[in-house]
Image (tube, rainbow, N blue to C red; front, side, top):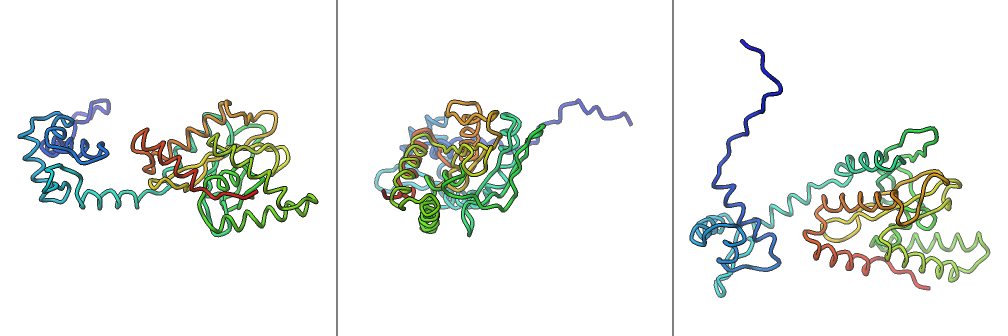
Length: 288
């Protein structure tokens, strides 16, 4: 028996063409922000209206599509919603972040990490160490301060939780006592800092948490538009540029945006913009 040539192209698996064709209608409905007339669905799917209608009738029987009895317009049905919700429920930020963090670490040559909100605050759940003569390590499970770390500041600016507000107040009080200032003074400075972070879309910390270490962090949003994690990059002062236009900051922001999209955030540019605005406006606000 002749040896198999591994370079030979593997034949494509045979499927059901009619299902693949019909899926174009579902994609057309999913891409629309409202219900559609038959002619519009057919045009966007690239097929004749008569053919589209036959597919839509079958999809309605399955619950994937529904039709308004009064207007005749079509929209996604209850079963389509169930499938979408089931898919979203299976999305794991930590698992999906793996290749994103690996790519970011290789791109910027710095230690990168993913943090999520835990019982004790912003917690590192995964990290990738960059190789080199001098490296920065971050232990999994460590809780980052809310006001002196890039990760904590990202959560302070974008995350929504009543517990965060309590932790933030306690941290501000401790900072004020250590610096011989009033809580109002510290809170006023922090409020301005958080406003800048929301405007820039990411946080920065220059040696404030650990002397000699800089950090940048960007929020990751889920399909509901709420922050679910933060992507952080860390490096040594002098070789780690925290400027907003630096390759490190831009790479970190792009990595967070990539992970957000994989978690279902922003089905279109317009929707993403609306969700970002909603997330920022709904984030915990500190009073001066």
